[in-house]
Image 1 (cartoon, helix red, strand yellow):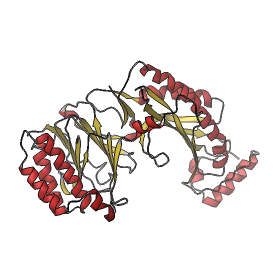
Image 2 (cartoon, chains in turn orange, blue):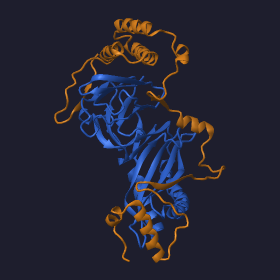
Image 3 (cartoon, helix red, strand yellow):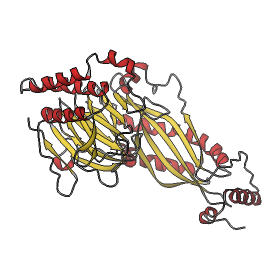
Image 4 (tube, chains in turn yellow, purple):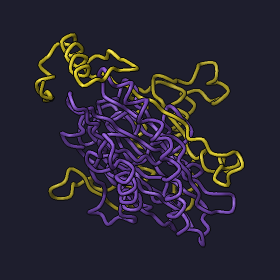
Length: 170
Length: 274
């Protein structure tokens, strides 16, 4: 029997397909040693860590691994919230106190202290987001912070693009 | 603090939003959005400051893969997508914020790796039932579940496995390369993982059993080629090494290069900091 095309095989039901493939393989003297009755769309896969001799110069030391790999922070929203029990240890200030403190710090922003204060204010905002669920007051405050810290500019899209850039004006 | 990014539910920075601040003590901040913004984002904007340039990427995959919208910020600049467009709208699931140093050397790895990989693989496959299908893809893989602290460079190649009596089986082979800086600032690397995938069918297991050991053995050849390539950097000393998704973004960007829409599998960019 001639080799079937993929289109012809696609028309067969799962059982017909298995039966036909086995039959045609047998006609060619082939029998699967590791027979897998896989559904359409499924697959077989295998992953292996490539073995390298422990004394190879390619293997990084623990210190090199630490230096190269520990360069990130992460946020997995919903699936990994900060447990309530940890919140007082992470941040001792209540959301209200934080909001009041952020507003005071925003009022005190000037050219001389901007670099220092922006670091503090953005850190406080991050703490506030961890402390309390996002709500309208946080969202409003975040907008005020963005304007105060980065200055204002006109979000005017580049012609033909739904986006753009401006240099911050302080 | 060096990169501040905001992601919004609606166009023109409106609706529910979440913001993230990447300090200057870390290279990356990675985000997997939760129920409030996952597959809901339409606009995004970001700033870079405090001595750093920066990039921000929003990906359609939850594993920093898929299509992306990126922003390229010089220090002191704000960049934005007021609307990420129909391809990405309500489809972004993960994001990366990345601090960029001022003195860096960046190299796109596809140009460096794909050609050599392809010719070596064709040599190996000559006279077998397996053939290369299309071109190899070279891309950055960030903190995969099977090696969750690593950033890897993946080489992925589709194959066609011919049988005399049945339509060809599709297969894919993948190598994951770990690049790192040694304690004396030299670039080093090796093939850390080998993967084989075969489409479903009666002979999937047989093909996998036949193919996978050859893929694993092929890592040694790839390692040799890799060491040749890395030797080009041997006379240089670097302070830091990291990866970017896709091709090299123009840094510092002119304002017309505020960002791009791309796919994470388009390329992998290795960045070395002097």
